Image (cartoon, rainbow, N blue to C red; front, side):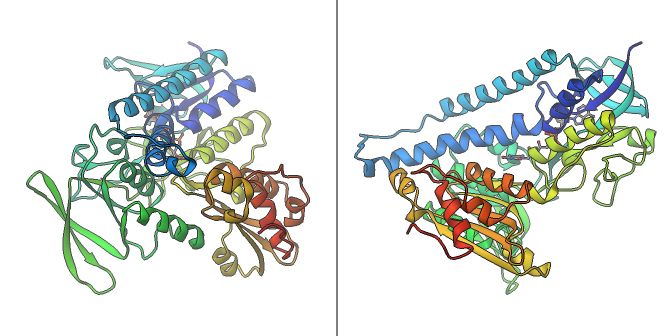
Length: 467
Ligand SMILES: Cc1cc2nc3c(=O)[nH]c(=O)nc-3n(C[C@H](O)[C@H](O)[C@H](O)COP(=O)(O)OP(=O)(O)OC[C@H]3O[C@@H](n4cnc5c(N)ncnc54)[C@H](O)[C@@H]3O)c2cc1C
């Protein structure tokens, strides 16, 4: 029997990108995937379908509300939801098929079936027909990802009580949608359905929406979403649910004054977080330990309690993000082959793909204060930028946070159109240990939205020129 150098369990962004790097480095590599298609949460029911619907719903909203200001008059704008969903599904199938192609191109063995660890060098695969086979390997990379958290009184049926997967596949626009949990996924889905015509209410336990992000940025987004008709209830605990004549009624309690009340909606999206997925993986057969939150324990080299078994991505500690999983997958492949592999957790970007977008990297001013770092901050609005005016995208700003003593950039926070793309240069600057002076002295084409990044860097030293 062939012995693989590396078998990856799970074909999400962590698993498939890690496998490609391993194959590039000469490892005989296999990837096992239990679902029908490769690509994991991200490609199938996460990053990609959500961004497809965000884009389509944004165009729908712009056609209704913004085109007229450009002198483009439309007689009527109609929603064709089936076409919107078909387009989304086609993007997903193109990309998941693309992973299959990449496996072939890199001579990776892609295996469809459920992977279970039998011992540190043996994995059993159960295919769709229930047939079991075993493969041998020198190393294992666990990249089994995560699944949505269910509340005990809100069990997913994906018709009335939705996880993000159900919210990405509705075949009608619900009149009223309740979103339990105002994190990134909740806000993105709230944006999609509000733009398509739902009356959306977001109910959040914490006293802030996206508490981890720069609150100046979050306030701009909330203002914009409220204009869309989205209602936000913070410091509110949902305590129970019942069906009410084809609708769902949620009971809730205010955490500020203890008052109880209820609210009804046609559907409820539960987006209260995700948890690591390790069901029936056979961790106990190889002595692989988990922490108190069900995450696989690893050392700084992604090694589990069993030296030849590694774990990466959503199933271990850290932000549940596709690009974080990818970098960890690459690091493991490089560690196995070269003994070196590295992920810089200070520069992991975090994005909310609403309109306007929020894009963030590194420390907020509040984080820096907590860490005792004295900061100098530069902030510049898109409203003072020529290209933003031409695009009609004047909402928002760029904020650069530096260590006052050294001018080194320790954080970047952007709210505005295309923030996710603009953040890239701040991430690169931070990766190189750059200062605001470095960004301020770099050419930025005129007129571009990226000039706002430069102006924010100049503003750290109060030298901004535009506006
Ligand atoms: C709606 C939504 C939107 C999101 N948007 C973004 C975004 O815009 N940007 C971003 O960075 N992140 C986003 N995320 C998060 C992102 O999808 C995850 O962080 C990322 O997919 C994690 O990658 P992973 O490789 O760790 O695991 P996953 O992508 O979850 O892949 C794990 C794979 O392992 C398979 N598997 C599990 N157990 C077994 C087994 N025993 N045998 C075989 N196969 C198994 C699963 O079927 C799955 O395909 C989003 C998530 C959701 C739900």
